[in-house]
Amino acid sequence: MTSRRLRVLMIAVAVIGAVSLAGCASSKIASTTQLTVMGSTTLDPITQVAAEEFMAANPGTRVMVSGVGSSAGIEAVSKGTCEIGTSSRDLKPAEATQTVEGVTFSLVDTKVARDAIAVIVNPSNPISSLTTSQVADIFAGRIKNWSQVVDADGVRGPDLAIGLVNRDEASGTREAFSKLVMKGIEFDPTAAVLPGTGQVRSVVAQSRIAIGYISLGFVKGSPVKALIIDGVTATEDNVANGTYPIKRNLHFISKGAPQGLAKQFIEFMLSPQIQDNVVIDGGFLPIGVGGK
Picture 1: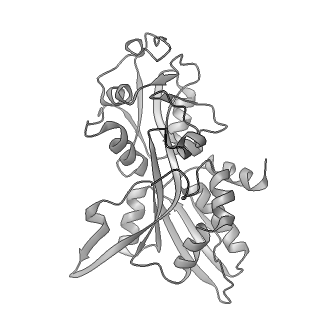
Picture 2: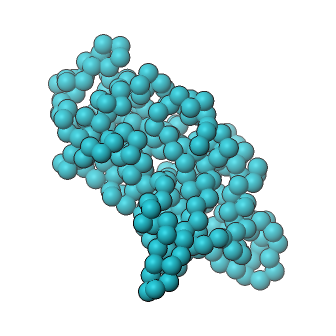
Picture 3: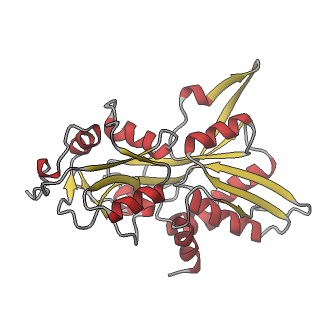
């Protein structure tokens, strides 16, 4: 295991949402400069590692990285309380162009990585595959017992109530999952709602009846089982070739065109040093791989 991959994994298992200090700057800067990056818990691990490498190359600079959720990150950059908001969902039209106190501004979206959303269960669950329709029915509460589920191999689930694990409404992963899987169907309001990717993974790992969804980058090496969806295994290769159905872009958002240190950090995030190493080590794909 490379030291870079180890750092990504160590950050991924840390408490999501903790504020940490990381470095940044893609060109040498003489004076101390600070950049604040807030948002997606999915992006948090690779953002922190990228910031460490960026800071190491530019002594005297500092980046504060905080995983608070995609919607919170977008709101923060809109209000000017951070320079970069990170998001695991697309901007909504009302977010893309805003008018505050008579001033109209646009948020600029820079795509920085490709990802998939894995549907996860406890490894003891005999179900190994579902269709997107079955997943939607489960998360809508139409299917409430695992015995009502038969997978592609003809395996029926155990006679146990399904334990739904959902994300909070600030989550970009929830928003993307709603768009790609639920397609207008409401989530079951009785589901457990958790604020971070790490929490969802932990609960599913400990509960025989649980089902949840997390970024594919958080599945590798973890004690959960990613289900085959529509006959396609959730792997980086299948995201790259476009066959896995639940996939998305990951974003850095700025208020207007990025300037100064924010611009330098975004450029650094898109550099081969990060795209071909940190992004891949984190279980994601470089932004140029796997289509739009």
